[in-house]
Length: 226
Image (tube, rainbow, N blue to C red):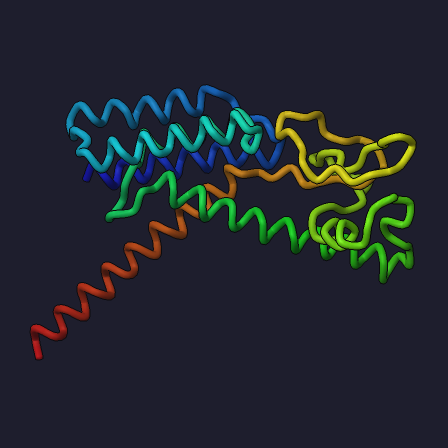
């Protein structure tokens, strides 16, 4: 019963966070305080075992490391830490590590598909050349086709993906997740709503585990009856 409560808290936390992440790319800290606090309080009636403690340590370490190297924004790091406290493990899965892998995979796939679509539309439908003003070798132009795109007029959440170096236009593939969003007509990188991908990953993982357990249980039951 406690485990189910933890799952509900975690899903509600990411649902609320994802709403603000998609809408504003800003998440109120009260979400982490309320949900993370609720998860911590549950340990008063269900003490963590050694695997839970290890999982919490893994989650906090990953979140702190990603934030230190500017791979995560502050809200993303707090989301992972809160999840580590609320639901450190589930049916043998180390949830923080699993969510990092799943959310990162989703964000990479989504970003590549989005950039390919945007660049292809610019090149094929709008009949415009791409990257022609950049002083870059071919391999970086090819890389840019998958990682950046020309900002559209209605695009609010994107980071600058170009810079001027000694008067030459260069790509800027690495960005700080706490940078200001670009408002200019330039090449940009998507500002990913990572908490939305956490939500998708968590719900998908829980459904997959429950479905597998039900199927496995029915299989064992049928084998016993036969």
